[in-house]
Amino acid sequence: MESLSQTEENYLKAIFKICENEDKPANTNAIASELQMTAAAISDMLKRLSSKELVHYKRHYGVTLTEHGSQIAKTLIRKHRLWEVFLCDVLNFTWDEVHEMAEQLEHVQSSELIFRLDRFLGRPKFDPHGDPIPDADGNFEMRKQIALSALQENESGVVVGVDEHSSAFLQYLDQMHLGLGVKVKVLEIYKFDNSLKISLGAGKELTISNKVSENLLVQKK
Amino acid sequence: MESLSQTEENYLKAIFKICENEDKPANTNAIASELQMTAAAISDMLKRLSSKELVHYKRHYGVTLTEHGSQIAKTLIRKHRLWEVFLCDVLNFTWDEVHEMAEQLEHVQSSELIFRLDRFLGRPKFDPHGDPIPDADGNFEMRKQIALSALQENESGVVVGVDEHSSAFLQYLDQMHLGLGVKVKVLEIYKFDNSLKISLGAGKELTISNKVSENLLVQKK
DNA sequence: TAATATTTTTAAGTTTGCTTAAAAATATTT
DNA sequence: AAATATTTTTAAGCAAACTTAAAAATATTA
Image (cartoon, rainbow over all chains, first blue to last red; front, side, top):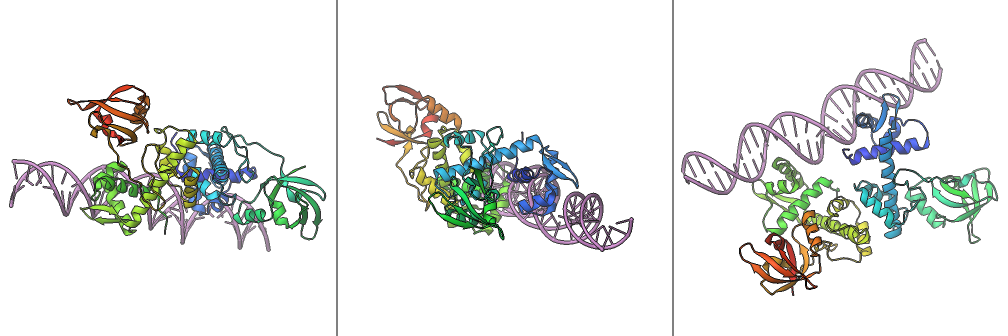
């Protein structure tokens, strides 16, 4: 088992991310956009990944991960999210600061390191953004989560995650005290722009745009 | 300030390491041997590092680090040794297991990360092998340490470091209970091969080869 | 279905960081 | 000092991972 370059690892992650949502092959342009590279570079690399049997690749059709490629991608996600927990819980970074560092830390090669980090952190099941951390076999713990925008008037939920990870969005949520674990209730839906009036735990009320409620994931309560 | 590749960083570290001991320029072959590469590759890279003003390079003469290059090398050493402390103190790895992981972790780019890691670890001054950790400005705390082989009969010292970092040597020291902080006394010097009979704290006696005593650093007591 | 637009691939060229082999510079020995 | 040995550099070439530009395949639209 030759070990992969960081570059190759990043391709596998990108393909995983794209195929995760829609259940069809990833196309070249989508990968190019995800990795901020030209389509030509992607075509180039897909041939190499294919010869290493990390992806199923059919020219002009699209690409999916093989079982092996998928395992590697899931391990990378596991490492990324465990390091994010470390950075937030142990070194007290905020949830909007940790992505770039985790992006580098995830490439450190040592399964024993990840095993011990996981144990040290108390085998967390979710990262600081509420994303599930796959176990050592690559299994994700799934939750019944929906966008806040899907709640009806007078329904309540607990914030368990976000669908957008930009610093700007995360910092906005901090400002509004809309962090993970906060209980929210939809008081009113303004039909013309789908903005919401919601109440937070301590009797506080807040109006948020549809853009925000679409990207806030809650568990119905 | 363009950030350097891991490869370039490794060259700076190698040059620093070579110049650290002997106070003269590092020659091409020494660097090649340190990095396990051909001399041609070194010549090649030295030109590039020189154009970035990280080294003073004079053909057929040798190479030294510029102030800037030296600062980068010291920061890398700081990062490497702090991560080693993390791996041993927090994740309970042994001192012979941590080098390779630290070798990768040291390349993670974030000064805030290192600042916080240092604080979390309690601002340690030495790594698990007793090597000094430079402060954020690159200053090393120097100790009056000598090889155990330099002690006379009936002189005592405390083990504070090692000059050789191979797993084999470190594991041997563990087996003999010759870790950092152990107080040793030279009972007898066998002239024909310079092996030593020494006593450890709890009345235990031990005979060690000259190879061992030359690589064990002690503080005279 | 023919024309047009989009997507993907191929081709050619670049940079980084290595290699081997040969040439050049410096050191050592006789 | 001349001959030999060592060290260092240059030259040519290679693989990885990109780029731009052109060609080819697939999709869309009139």
